[in-house]
Image 1: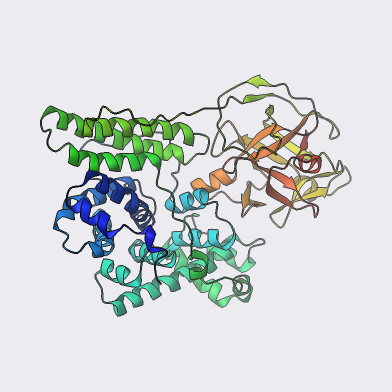
Image 2: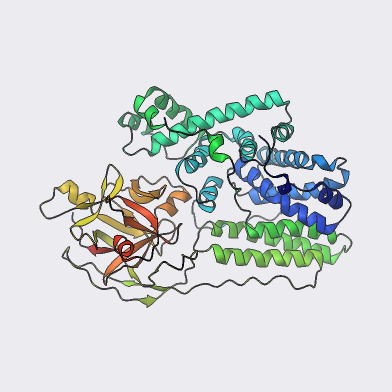
Length: 530
């Protein structure tokens, strides 16, 4: 597959100028190459904590070795080959290189997002594209290197010749390895379909009895045997589109702003500071080391939309300090304004003991929370009730219907005093502190399954401990369309709300400034049915 528009590739003249010592050309070269390097390293290392370090070290080695590059037109193949060597070094040594000081332990015990999480969140992937990304978790570590390169080829970022050169293999041998990885990825896609099916194949339960919920190559092989021999599971995978078609033209995962600043500080900035040895250089090194640790901490925070803006501000400040110390520049840099919107917070509210009424919540100030801007046409409520414990959620525009479930999918259904115990139990949920943010909520049913969105469809699934699941299963309460009602806004897709459609299915839909939409996403908290 050929690369996309060659204008997106580093110009040979820029490579030659950077090789000859032109600082502006070197900076441009770093900016042009960083997204490719970041995506290859991130996917090959599965978002390991050393990704930022490996990316930085790769770019340092690239600029250090640039004076010896005899053929600038082959720069891209040379760049990818260096990237692959750094990935292999990381797996071989299993350590971080950039600082001798240990990385500060956050001590929060949270599950950190892997690169699949980041790709899904930052590119807003859904449907089969999301399934392809999730399937990458089921591959072996040694398969990820080829996967990362083939992914870039399919997206139009690399040619097959560049892929072969990076692997150090003849084109024919490289093609065999790529084909093997593609086959395993397709197998993993079938496994993802089977595991996430609703209802799940009953014959799969004995196979999953001892599974800990973590995808792996070993479990891919075990589950693939069932999928291959099960007519029902094969049928569920019959509509899968070839991965190449899904990846063609897919955008790269954006490079975190803080990481970009640190790479520039360590490469271009460090190079220009070479003449100023002594105390200034030592200060620059210490500053860059501190900034590197700050970037990794901010990277963990940036996985949360609530704190992404603040994390970016912290990282930009650290990167700016590293750049200043490295270059000695006294020129004022760009000013980054970060405005944190003050949201009126929730107040305590208890549900009415009768299913037909609920008290009106009272708004009180609480913590600052920043969201991705919602379209201006959308009317976004600012008051939010405080919820805890067991509740039923009665629809505002369909007073006899409640949030419920059918075959693990979220629906709106009628519930009353004469309904069966199973029906009343299916419409009762326990509100617990949010898996991704304790200031929001997660909803559990009687079986311990969590309400979450998957491809924007509301469903109930067993907690798999992943960071993505935590975000998918976290909802923030907002004031509803009528006094005493609430709306549940997605934590990781701000501006999307849990809402029933005309067919009474529950979805995560984007905000609209219409009375029908506001009523469809508003619910009254009532006493639990069971």
